[in-house]
Structures are given as structure tokens and as C-alpha cells.
Image: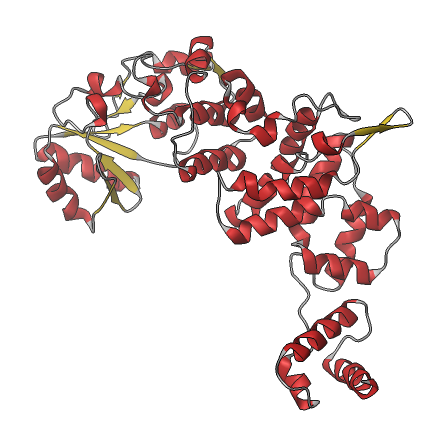
Length: 431
């Protein structure tokens, strides 16, 4: 990608403009991190002229209605923004960066020369470890900056400047699309080495008020830590160590860790002087769709996260009951066993300490590995065609027989097709 950036910069220069790397890529390089997203800001070229330059390098896709952004092979290319967010190619770099959110994101780099342009002391703030706004008059133009500050605090470990936090408290997310909120939340939970810091930043910036299912944890007592909020913070830290680097695996895991305790405020009670939370997992599972409606509306993922939260204590319970293989098979049929194992282990460590062993988890893992069910749901041995061979007509009755056969399979009544047919034939003859 660096070669493409250099070639684009040269082509823009030859056309009479100037292309500068902007935002997070410049910041990350100065921090010694690999640049994940590369943005180019082009000065001095009108949109048609810029489009003709970009078109030489491949198919160009323009996104955004009012403010156009061109996407070329993973690189986002845009003209600088003027007042009101309107693109203005004649702005100077200093004028354009005044509309950036944070000083560390207002850094520019010339790919042709390597020169860093720093008009707002961004490098100083990086050295001091501070997240500081560029301009108080333009900071509020995008309310999503509230969550970006939260995410960067968690991701980079930089402290939030008090005046920036005060500006954040004035922002409201009510008019922000849920997709954008979800993107920032996802980048926080998947990208931060210490995602628990994000909960600290939610409070410091006032962002917690936008997540009512979470804010109720603040005042909820907890037997193991200071509060249910503190337990959730510890759960996020522990779950970060369970991530595998795959979005489709890590995103539901981290959502499960974030939401696992949200049923505690409703379920908490004292019995014999002891704090207990009977049924809190079911309450939390019911809250999952409500929370995800404002973050991620994928129905499959919502069901998966709700199942994880609902079953969060099942592995420990099965071990305490010394349950046999059928119970673990049935659990694997209800929830992704690999994700549940990782979530349960994180929740266990949140309560007992980061070095705590989890024997119940090892027991479950051994059961699932032995039957090739770790991260896999058991599949029904008997199919409709099998019942048809036994004379069962397609329809509701066949569906009920298939369900009964699957439950018998999970219980260990049979383990192959021949055994399943024999079991089913016997039941049918008794009808």
C-alpha cells in the first residue's frame, strides 16, 4: 500500500495538487504502530481533476453524498473540508486541520518528502500521552467524536484532557446512525489491548448516559468486586485475552463480556446476609436485543450473543453437578461451545483473578473435543428421508418425530444411522 500512496502523491503533484496522508495513519507511525487505515487528503485539485488522476490507478468508487470520499484499493482519498463540512480544495492544510477532532489526528505527512505537518502540537500531545481537541468551536460538529475519544483512550492508553472531556459531555448521540456507533464500539472492543479502559472513559466523558443498560451497573453492589460495573470492566480485560483475531469470533465474545452482567441490577437480593443474583443471566439475555438494536442489528449475531449470555453459568453448573456427556451435547446444540468456553473462562477470571484456573472449563473442553463438538453444533443423524423409508409421511408429524429422534441422539440412545433407524422403528411400532 505504501507504494500506491507514493505513486498517487506523485501523480497528484504532477497535476498541480498536493496529496497528504492524514489522521490515524500518521499518528500510528509516530507511535511505532502499523497503520491500519490510510487516508489521503488532496489540496489544489477540483473534483473532476482529482477523479481523472485517481482513475489512472484503477476503478474508483465514490462514497458519501455531501462530502465525497474516493476509495481506491483500500485507500480513502478526499478533498479538505471547509465550513459546514463542504469540500474545498483551495483550503490550506492548516485551515483544513482545524476541523479535525483531536490534535493527534490532525497530523499530516507528505508521502513525497516524509515531512510531518503539525499545526496543533499533535506530536507534543503524543509524547505527553494526551487526547486533546483541536478547536472547541468545531469539535461538536460530529457527535460521534464522543465515542472516538472513548475508543482511543482504551486503544492507546492516552489520558483525556479535562477540557476535551468537558466538550464531550455536551455531545449527544441521538442523531447518530446506529451503524456508526457500532463501528466505534467494535473498534474499541476488538482493537484495544485493555478494553476495560473504555468503561473508565465512558464515565469521564459522560458517554455512559447513552448506554442505559450499562449505566445501571454503576450502582449495583457485587459480592466479588466493588460493583457490577467493576465486574464488567474486569470481564472485558479478561475477554481481551480470549480473542483470536477473527472478527466473527471476537465481536460476539466481547459483546457477551460487556453484557453478561446487565441482569444483576434486577436480580440482586440478599439472603442470610449474602448478596445473590438468581436468574440474572436470563435477565441479561433478554436485554441483549435491546442493546444491540443500537449497535449491531444482525439477527444471527443477536441470537448468538443472547445465547452466550443466557448460558454464561452453565459450564460451571454442569461441572458442579458432575453431568455426563448428554448434558454437554445438549449445551453445544444451544450455543457455540467454543465461544461459551472462552466467555465463561473470562467471567471466571473476572471474579477470581486473572491467574485463576477454570477446571469446569477444562472438563467441558475435554467433553467437546472428544466428540468433535468444540465450536460445532451436533448434527441430527436422522433426516426426513430416513423417516420416509420407515413410512412416515412428510408433514408436522414427521417434524415432531425428527425432534424426538434428535433429543434421543443427544441423550446417547444411538450414535449412528443404523442405531437411529432401529430406535425410530421401535417407537413407530409402538404407536
